[in-house]
Structures are given as C-alpha cells and as structure tokens.
Image 1 (cartoon, one colour):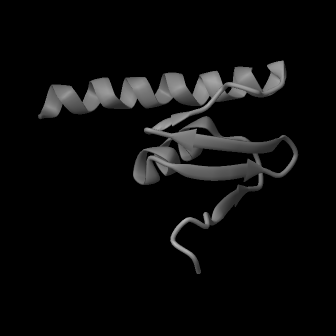
Image 2 (cartoon, helix red, strand yellow; image 1 turned 180 degrees about the vertical axis):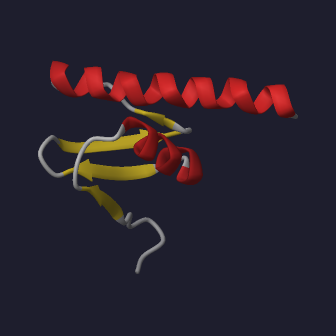
Length: 77
C-alpha cells in the first residue's frame, strides 16, 4: 500500500461519539457512513468545505464533540 493511500473506515450508522473517537485517533483521513455518504478529516476535525448542507450539519456535530473532548483532556493534563 502506498504511503499516500488512505484506508477508509465504513460506519454502518451515524454515531457522532464513535466517529469523533476515530477522527481523534487518526487526525487525517476519510470515513464513510453507509446511509449518509463520505467525509474527510484533517488536523483532527471533519472538513466541511464542499459538502452538501445535510452533511455539514453532521460534520458540525462531530467537530463539536471533538472540541469538547479536547477541553475535557486539558482538565486532566
């Protein structure tokens, strides 16, 4: 497998917390939710540009969770 190639995680259903944990672990890549569509993420956040509005909403939910996870970690550091 080429270094630049990405493996895409496929989620059966949209679960914001599960997706947030995945994004937090890898920081960069792509994932897909079977009934929704494909998403990309970089720097630990789901990218929102060039997404239809319904996907932007879902990406925003995941990003909000990611931000709260970061805040929770800083309390324990």
